Length: 221
Length: 149
Image 1 (cartoon, rainbow over the protein chains, first blue to last red):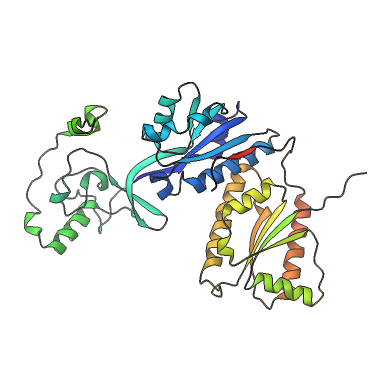
Image 2: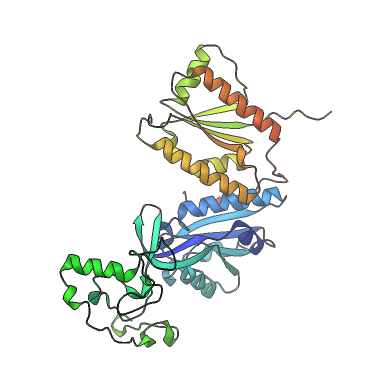
């Protein structure tokens, strides 16, 4: 999922400082799973903003709503009846959702309430870790299902660097060395004979390095 | 003459321990401040952080969550979850600028009637010393729920 974390409260308060009626929109997908911007978090942030406003003697009205997704125009359209009563929109979705709201409802200012972080997976309850960098040309089949682009600090393609220390990266003792993980996984799978096969330099144009990307499916239009 | 401050304190008490302790305090005819409004919940694990936030919004000066002793929760670890949520709420209240002491978690057994009275009296004193919740209520804020949480 795309992970995110709520912005500091005073930052969000500074965005809505001139406004008295806001629309606070959550998203039922990724940000719900990482407990950053779903229905519950919308309710909590609404209360927090109102308490903070009351502390400053300001009355703040909050219209709370959570969409199934904020990245699909069909869902974003359903907000239309709520827009008239709103002086500003605060979105708890990832950057994709915030931008879709801003695109559709251009006449109202839209502010993000979360910082979008990374594409990752749950390691255990309450812990999410980066897993994918969206490079556009997946090589997970060659590395035992562990991504050296997302999980190696240096994005190395052919084994660990000299900083690998007892399975940990030199960046932090809490960070696993991706290549140590890959080696252990290859031992488990019995594919260590493929370890020394050279993975050649990547063409990064399939990734963000080639500019903003788009997928077009003619058959689905 | 200054109007005397009588705090409004909401106490979420779990059915199996804290509420029973409160009941025992009653049976023992022990006095504790009438500022304490008890809400019985099946387990403190039922208490969503949102309940605390809405209580403060609606006029509570303090919110107490009273559950079972560690290891004794009727639902295994609901009280532990409540403790974690209270810790989170304290950091959130600090961000908002409300004193974190206004929300607290306490633990007791069902037989601790005397301690229930003592604990809530102590919490009441703490809230009296802190004063009313620092919110200026010029007019009631409008909270439109386009859907239920």
